[in-house]
Length: 455
Image (cartoon, rainbow, N blue to C red):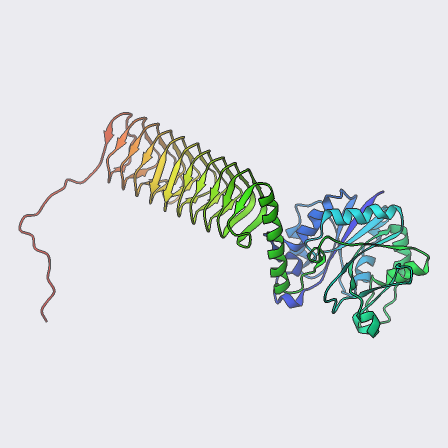
């Protein structure tokens, strides 16, 4: 069966009160629409078509890294009208799955179940029962329990208003049947819009049994119409991610205070403290400890690493049993070998640091290659930028850099070299020697400290 997925994403989302198209607002660091696209792509459809409208070019640009077809809905005349715009693009397909760009948590297993049931019928509808179904179209069933129509709340009788089962709008249909039903939909309603839900009654009139499927939770089919709903889905989704991690052997200090904005892979016996944020693709090895308020983005952290409080690590690799922070910043293209110590208020950028080396206090290391078992004293700076270009500093194994040193790149510090505290090094320092540069210290006899005027 050649399956096509149609995602309706043309709405303006006025209740978001934003210049950004609603489907581009982010949940777990990704646009709402991208969540839907990713779920659909796991079905491996022949094509996925986005019906776009408001903020069209922004939407297309944001999803340009996916193999998608696009169809513009210039006039917003209802969900049925939206599907009509894409009829020509669906002509070669056998079945169509209709999803919504503002319903981000739809699960692949749910929609796979829907598509599989198309082997038994021509229309499968996703429904859910709510404690409070107010505002939703109700599923009306006959005496045999078959769904026969959807009644909108404003048109429902008192008995129909008591129905808890509601329409989600998500459906899978035989493509040929869909074409026929679309031609029968009319806009004889107060809004003068074409409602896709009308196909339910049309299908029943044609003798088609409407099969219904239910999601695992109501959040799975909950749409986002304002920022309050977005916040609710964000916390629900984060809680689900946290529970999956805990079930895999990760300890999370407070599952309500973790944010995963991408993909987090974690080994056994990992501990994550409160308010940790993970962005992009992050991998934590066995026994890693992540302290409170840490931000880790697109990084690989090897086993046994201790990341203390308030650290920022981005696009970096941290070797096994290293210790980072507190208040350290590891910037992109940094590679730390095993058992490296990077301490408080240290920044490392685009550098390689060898095993067993220590940069423990108040230092900046940029564009550098540091060997093994190097000690970098407090307040050391690699002066890598001359105002126009970046230059490299190389420090050999077992070197000792005294506190408050400035290494003016390009410069090489030899293996086993010692740089005296307070030195400004502008030329290469030979191996196994002491290099220092200081003004001569003097003491002025008889000098008196200035005093305030008595006036």
